[in-house]
Amino acid sequence: MPFSKKTEEFLECERWWILALLMYVGGFFGGFTYTVRGGIFCNAQTANFVLLAMSIGDGDWAMVRYLIIPITAYFLGAVVSEWLAGTIKRFGLIRWDTLLIFIEMAVVMALGFIPDSAPFQISQVAVNVICSMQYNTFRQADGIPMATTFCTNHVRQVGVFFTKGVRHKESAHFKRMLFHAGMLTLFTLGGVTSTITCRHMGGHGVWFALIPLGIILCDLLYADLKTERGEMDRKPRGH
Image 1: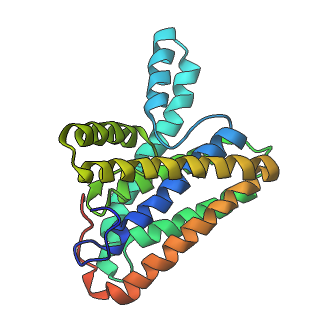
Image 2: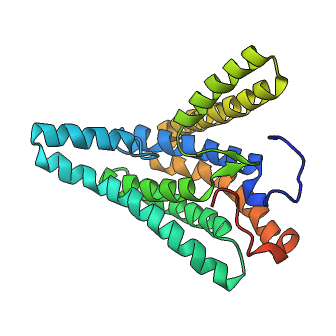
């Protein structure tokens, strides 16, 4: 169940609060790219595929070539995360999940130094890649399948468990509904925070995302080096 105490059943990288903070970061990235980096969302690719189809239909081949860039970046993010996960595991030092958070922090730090006058595509491609890696890496929260970079499935799950709760009069369904609603709330708060910070600080506002990412990194490092040191071969659920 979500919000349960720490048990041996789940690894630290699967805990609900880790993925909750990542939902907040996902919302933050969406607000960042839309507010100060070109007015688009880079967390997922559905809209880009719709635009790709429309561009093909209109014969707008310049736009087709333009859209191939973020789609390819998202594809490469998934490829890199899959490849590095197996490579890092062989060293037995830290988990890929932990290294990914460090990589995200490094990318966020670099993004804050990019001038607002620079081409938006630089930031957009970078966010495409890290969102793809985050989506592919963190797949479950306390055994509940979820995505941390977009909201569609959470909205569906809120509707599903609300209906089940009303129909069957079982509190467990309402708890699951609240779990997904909470994730949506955190995603929204991330977007609110990003909009406020970026409106006032420009591209430097992205550095605010280092706070939740830093909290996650410290916790995962402690688990890798201390509490879960002997469990490096154990896979997170959903992989």
